[in-house]
Length: 145
Image (cartoon, rainbow, N blue to C red; front, top):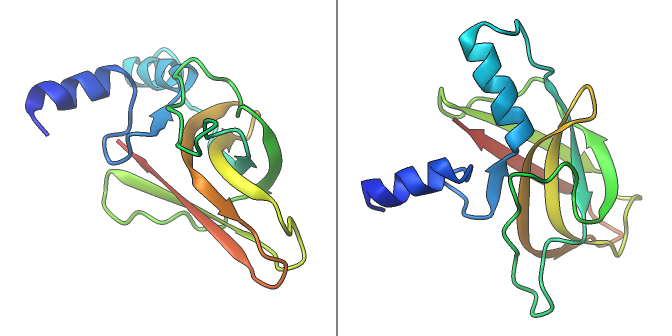
């Protein structure tokens, strides 16, 4: 990826490792204020929300919009596992596990990180993943800075 493409992607709010992942504008504003010392904290991520509205009619993931304040169609929400991992110093890794007996047959195609105040921090769309009734399902969301 060229430096121009990287800058353009960063400017549009896209997390570079995933073309269908964004940090929401609301979170970016909060991070700018935090960095400038205007506010002292931002609420931590507490949940991963999952939905089924992340693909178009052809089944291709649609790019999320930095202005989004919610998933297109949220189906469920689970608390992130603690402790949060840092696979590299600039990446926070959030993980949830859907128990075997929950969400059987649900087709997931979008997920979002939600903070303790209920605000969406980041949103990712993906190809459909259907949950079987006899397995645990885990989702990992890497937020790269």
